[in-house]
Image 1 (cartoon, rainbow, N blue to C red):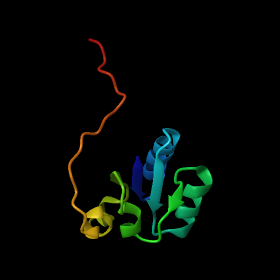
Image 2: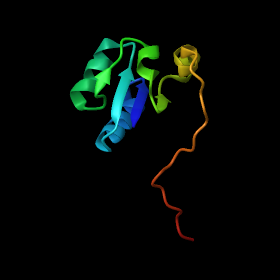
Image 3: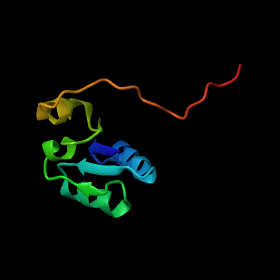
Image 4: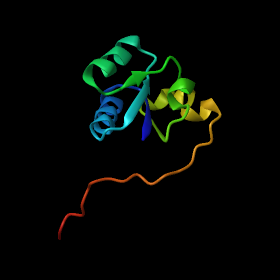
Length: 97
């Protein structure tokens, strides 16, 4: 699976590490070059795109992680690619009782 991660901070980096750990291809974008470099160094991204559009192009899923106030300007919807809602599988199990 090709996973696009927009924003390689705490949340995006964690998502990238988890996806890479599953064997997924993780293409990331972060406007901060230091964050992008750290994503590659830590394995949170298998590659870093030069643009938001480059990160989400051909991805099976895009995960946008960033400050809420900045999300409208950094969302994959800007790439004019249709966004389809998808279920979010988790490994969480109901707690008994």
